[in-house]
Image (cartoon, rainbow, N blue to C red; front, top):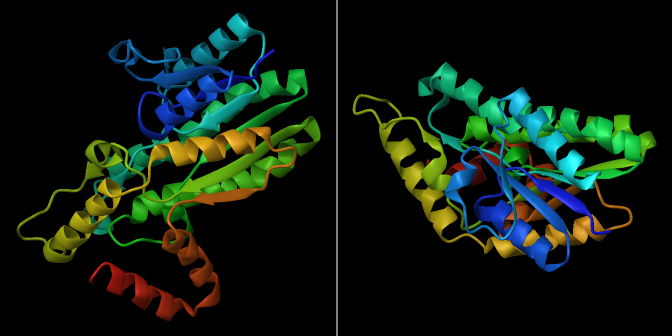
Length: 267
């Protein structure tokens, strides 16, 4: 029997590319979206799921189990971007971002764990971000939410290891997806003391996404992780300098690394 895979946020970008790749490899794939009817031409079923709604999560997970009798792999891919000066970002938007990027994945994990535990096997892959390894200016909330998911995975995987359930992180760099159009942008206020540096940084971030790598590279890496006998804790996928920036942070004094970041963003 083919492995059954659930991909949250499977209607576009990395989720869509991964789903199509796995279908072509013979997997049974389910994607999710808050508006599944918008994707009638998907190569795999798109089910309704809102990671901020526990009832929605449980309903979809149970539907897959009832249909397939098992769930082998969860790819926690649904996420949301957010930019802006932290001082000027509304509390409601900060909380909403953590609901999607942090609490949402936790609740999906909690929903699938009893099923995986009963079948004595399973793999959970949390899609984080290279931005989660460092506090990036005007993307601090996003960095914090993804960094929190990285640390959560380190703890969670030790708690579930004796159930024969594996959990890993995969941190992408910039990929050519629609995340920029869907992210929350704190408004550029004319009287803001952050107006010019935020404007410059926002333009640079959008350029990075537009010139990002093909999401199919992430799909192929996820396929390899699913087939790994003993997957690693952390994976990073992206351009060399994006991955090397994590190494530099470990090696360089904090203030020198901070200066490199500020020079990069022209701050």
